Length: 112
Length: 112
Image (cartoon, rainbow over all chains, first blue to last red; front, side, top):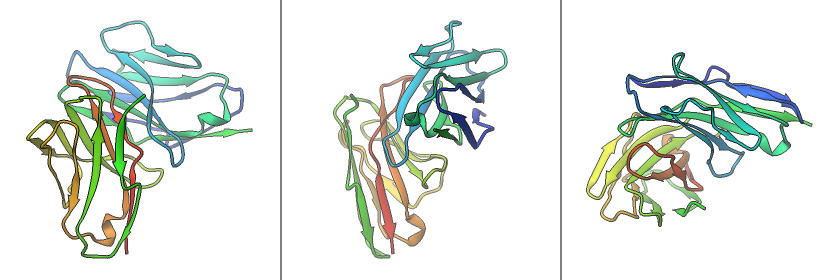
């Protein structure tokens, strides 16, 4: 069975510092996509970053980057230079095209 | 910019009422989804569709039903609302295959 696990229900980071959110997944498929979504309080869920499993290079979007370890089935999100607007729930997700799963989420607090 | 709409945004109704939550997308996406989410908590998939006349139940048992008569429209109906249905309902859509999901703003339902 395919699963996505986020082992950190809550994380906090000082403004301007760096934080890493963990995610592990399990799938028997060889081709799949991994995603990190952000859901700010009372606001719409949006995509933060995406990684194709066949690509070895880690995806980067401005201050957001991932550490994709395919053999270990690990997909962590690093947020650099954290800003107050980064405070949100972050969900990790895996999509094989036929199946998809979201993790249980990590609530990130940014401390001024 | 994602064009996926949900109405109403907020709904307060009495027990036993029949309600329909609307979801529409203008992106021509084949896949559409309904999630139930309590504030700050994980997403629970309740229904999904891979195209017109295709609907499936998700992981979370739900007393709701859905229909997909048109590609752009994926309404969710509760025949008899109960207080246990109080939650936020998120609609999402994606292209066919493994792809990011675009989320609507959500409907916050309260059943008294």
